Image (cartoon, rainbow, N blue to C red; front, side, top):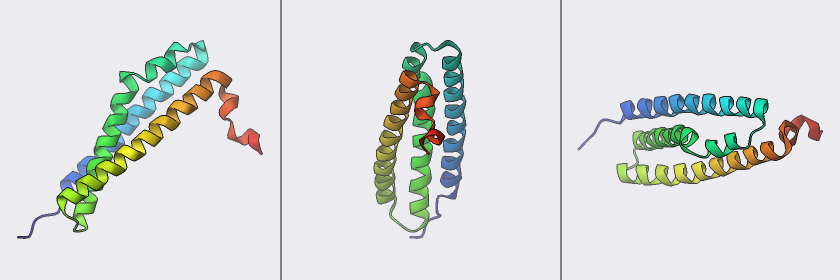
Length: 121
């Protein structure tokens, strides 16, 4: 009747999200650095492909497992926890991906001054 809370999945989901986040950061930094040196629009087109989407999907998967495990630890049923975390992860992932795409387009069109928030004072 009683079950063990999924502490291992909580830690594993957090670890997967953090490690994929680091890979995402390194890939994005390298692409922006390469773009700033060459000013080639091909770099940003390649970012929307496989090299940036795989770490992003890893982040989403890890955070989804982390959220579901956290909800399950607090006593919510397993199915409800996963359905809720999948919906939240998809909605957040779509919003973050579209915002990133908009920022990269802004950077491509106007350079780094286009996203300089300190200049808006």
